[in-house]
Length: 175
Image 1 (cartoon, rainbow, N blue to C red):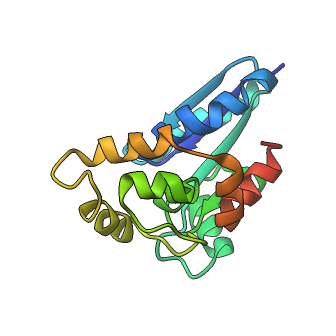
Image 2: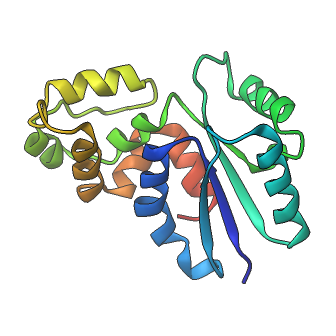
């Protein structure tokens, strides 16, 4: 077995991959390491990718599409910044990781959190998520608690039905 490195943007991405994705991959890799790249220097990440390749390990690079017009444009933007990044290792989240979070909730979980249940979360942004949070039972509590309650109620099969890029990711990694 080989090691897998998962590059994610920030804390909420790290939580998602640590608690939702990693448990479904542990039997296929020697170890799985999650690296937050958004606050690190570009050269540091380029060196990190080079060292992963020299160890014959594998990696995935996760990025939100943000304001890019399409996934291809976002991948090209990332490859200009991180010159050692291989195109087939990039997974683009449409729109943002919050869309993957909300995708995993069924009607019962949404009812318990007192939020709207979405049939499709492809267009959910961080701003939409914050608005949903402000109208939930968590309003007035930490938004991190809201994320964690979503994780506790998460259903991957439902998420695959509700979010196209999450389904793509799961299919690519046989999750």
